[in-house]
Image (tube, rainbow, N blue to C red; front, side):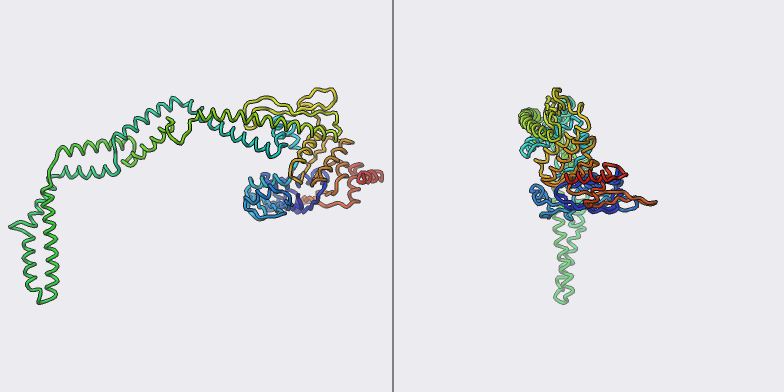
Length: 552
């Protein structure tokens, strides 16, 4: 239930704070005074899209804040808990629209996105206006209206069908795409098979190219390497010019005098290390020379292997690693196109299975929907009797249709307003006043099933008068006995029956226009209703009639 709403700098409203109680509250005032602006502010609070047009001229932002009682809303409590929003019996929603186009929403002080705000708002208030009546006059919307009459078990059944339909639609799209591109896929498969086989036959190894290049350079420079190794060996250990021989002699000389001075001993040790290191180097050089053997066939094999590698890298990548990565990706794509990947189901078999499940689910949904239609017909028939349409007959008719997200049937409301008339499509025969009463009948039937305790009616009594207006007023008042109803009305009957009346008026000067709202006293209510009955020239008769309406 809406306990209080605060509106600041919203359209022509500068600052308004309204408190609401259980029962029926009516908002009245001259056309253009701002009654619908208050409903717009409520819609914004419940998640409607915001534009900068709502910001009062000359201000930085529009602000709307609402206080709600959620004591009995178990489903809402669960949603808030899942979202980590703290709150027990009361909920504060705040919405700000800034001049830069941003919109900020908070629930109990916590920032929320627009999607979550709409979810929360759907539990709180049902706002009914001319838009709903326009929807009623569009037959494609009738299936949605009928389904919204269903309880939780029906909603679960429909959700299951919609999940199946979406899965079926996606798989069918893939199958059609696969069939359409079958020739292209075959060519692609053949090409991938050739490329994969070619790369596998090359048997490339990471780092192989660098190793082969090094071996190739050694083979190409065999003579230079052999000559350098031989010359180095001669210089180190040759009978005539042996470096090692002379170093050994120097080592022996210093070793013979090392006992006379620590410095001699230190230098003798250094020369000794140098001698043994050079001796080891000389031995390794001799081994290398013995191993040196030019193999022309090996050079040809290295050249051939490098040619294979260069051919692969030119086709599939800049390096051996790139070629191997291309091979990996091609193998995955090949498996997908040929259905050999273990993670990809057989699409056509899956499609056939889903088709069977979808048909079964659609039949179950249709049966449940037909039962729902009978219940809705009975309840609306009773509601219409209360609204002086006791002779009217209301019926929900079905027609087979292509499978879509709503099922495999079309729904349309039919009505006969007078005895003896054939049932005809509602959109073709109903008058404005009949539409108002039918929409109210639907809302009344739905209100008994919905958990929402706050309902807002925005000028639903348009096009009616006399006893019909009285019946509509009584029906709205009855809804208020089970919760809270807020009404914008121009009808004296609806205004008089309300428990509370707010009066909205527009005041202007040379610079600004401002809407103000105040709760009327009983005597002020008499004056306002009398004006509606008699116009600006008030008479005692009009006042007496207004009092009679209020007393009644």
